Length: 495
Image (tube, rainbow, N blue to C red):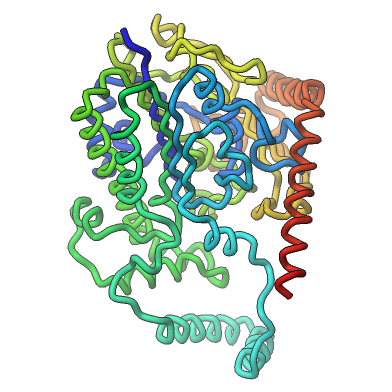
C-alpha cells in the first residue's frame, strides 16, 4: 500500500456536546456524522490547555503548554512538530489557519510547513494586542462623566447602561451583509485554498492542517448555514444585536440568558458551515482518488461556554467540561477499527498516535504516547488527562500577562480535580453523579480520590520542571526579545 497522507482539522471553540456524532440533537454536523460511522470517535478527548495558546503546543508538538515555563507562549524556534516530522520523511506540508492571531509565525506555528497561510494577521493581531484607548474627545469625556455620576446609584447605573447600549446599537454603522463584520475568513475560503493546494500536491504523501474560526465569537454564520439548520432567513441586524448584547459586561446571567438560545443558534450555524465545507473537501479528495490513502482527524482546541457556569466564551480561568472536553474523530482507510473510544484521551497523545498510524516515528521530544496499537486491537486503557492554564492570561502577546499562577486540572473517567493556585482552591467533581459540575464534593468525602489526584498533580509539576528543555526555553525567550526589539525599532522609525 502506498504511503498514507494526513489531514488534521481543528475547529476553534467546538465543544464536544455540540457534535452530532456525540449526541447533539441539532443538525450541526451531518457530514461528519456520516463519516463517524466508519471512523473512531473519542467521547472523552481532553485538551491539554485552554484557550488556543495553551492548547496547541500539545496538539502540534505533543508537550504541555507550560513545559518550557509560563513565560513562553506558542512553539519555540526549531521545536519538533507533526509537520516537521513529516517534512523530514518527504511529505509535502501545508497549513491554512483562519487568521487566529495565536496560530501564526509569531508564535512558531509555521515550523515544518512548506506553505503556511494564516490569511493575514495584521487586523486580528492588532485587535489582540490592543490594550489602550485613544484619548477621548469632548463628547467622550462628557459621556465618561455621566457614566461615573449615574453609577453612584445602582438603579441609575443600570438605566444608564441600558440607554447607552441602545444608543450604540442605533448609531453603529450598518452594512448590507455580515461579511465586513467577520474578523476571520470563513470556512469556504479556507477550504478553497486547501483544495487548490491539494490539486497540485495530491500525487505525493502530504500533511494538510486546516484551522477554522466559524464557531468563534463574534458569531456571524453564513445565511446558507443558518437556513441549513432549519431557521428562517433573518435580518442581519439581529445577529449584530445578539452578539453585542452577549458581549456586555454590565448585565448579569439572568438578563444574558434572554438571548442565550439565539446566540447558541448562531454558534451552531457556524459549526454547520464548517461541516458543509469539509464535505466539499472530502468530495474533492474522492475526485483526486486519494481519499482512500488519507488519514483524516478532526478535533478542537477548546470548547465554548454559554452560561454553563455563569460565564461566556473561553478564558483561561474557566475550567468546565464545556471548555476542556472536545470532539475527536479519526478516520483511517483500510482498517477495521472500533467505532468509539470512551477512555480519557489527552490531546497530548494525538501527534504520536497519528504518526504511528502513518508508520512514522515520533520525535524524541514528544511527551505524549501513541495509543494506535490499543485502538487497532480494540483495547481500552485507563489514563489521566492533565490540563494546565495560567489564570487571567487573556492576551499572551505580552509576557507580563503570562506570569500569573497556574490552574491545573486532573481528569479521570469519573473524577475531575481543579486546582487553582491563584486563590488557592481545590475542587473535586464526580462526573458520573454531577456531569455538569454543579457542586464540588465536600472536602471530607472521597479522601482516597483526593489523595490520588493530588499525587498525580504533584508528579506532573515535578516532571514538568525536571524534564524542562532549558536550551529550547532559552531560544524561545531569545526569539521573543528579538521580536520585541524589532517592533520597538519600527515604532520609533514611524514616530
